[in-house]
Length: 427
Image (cartoon, rainbow, N blue to C red; front, top):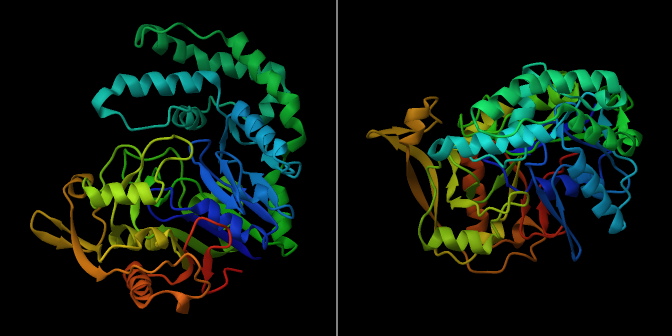
């Protein structure tokens, strides 16, 4: 049962799309198991660049079946727009499967997200304003709308009315906004039903049968480990579980079927949105990383905060995910620095700490303890093997591997699909 989980080992934006796409030709199914259209992937194929927001990266591999699992929240308008855009570029999207148990992002979820974040002011979380959090909240509160509800108008109307009973009270009395008409929401959602119907399936059954038939299934996480609702830098997190355990609940596959867990690590560290970030840079180095690395959010369009590599959070990701391998991305961005700092520990109130503090207060006060590693100036984008890398680049990779606690099995040396050094096969 060759089931693999591929996830972000930092705060997201590590290059999961490239890694997933690289494996896409070798796997039979690629499954998004959590998140929504707040988790963008950029995939470069030849001279073509694809920005994916909701669809699994495997959609670009013709022999692969892309799956949106039950743990994902789906904005129908975004889904259809993304499918249309790919179809116009000659990409066949007909094999896509969507779980009937996935929850729908409704127009009122988007409204609530935006007004709530605005109301928080300085205390805002830094959400994308796309309705992700409120949709997950509805799911937990058992007033959510699922994909399957689009095919029973009576149930859909009842559920929308129940959800809006409380939300309209909040919108009108707390936020001074107009009430949302339930019938208009129902009409809009029903308008998507037939367009989505060809893709809707019992994906839990499909995936478990695929594994029983020895098919290769890749579970693709959005965001990253430090944005996990349970294991991230709460409250500055997403509303779901991008960690490895989320693949089981978000796709309906038991943990005994997972054979490998691959963490994507950027050769430095970035973060989008608010929250603590010990190695964040506010100087010329930070700006250079942002410029050279093209650090702008695929979905949000926001500049990413940039900093040096943080081995403390890498070790934490290894532990909470049970990582078996790392895929190191964007090593080429570091070309040109004489010395490269690597955070090996934190200092908190005068005490050296080598593991991620569980206390939010301590993490906010953490100061990075750096070790300096020699840099390199040679162009590494044409490297095909580990031996092709300059010695200092090799030493940098080896140091990160030792500090992070799992083997680095692949290295990204450029944005292209073929600009990757594979050290150990993932499959």
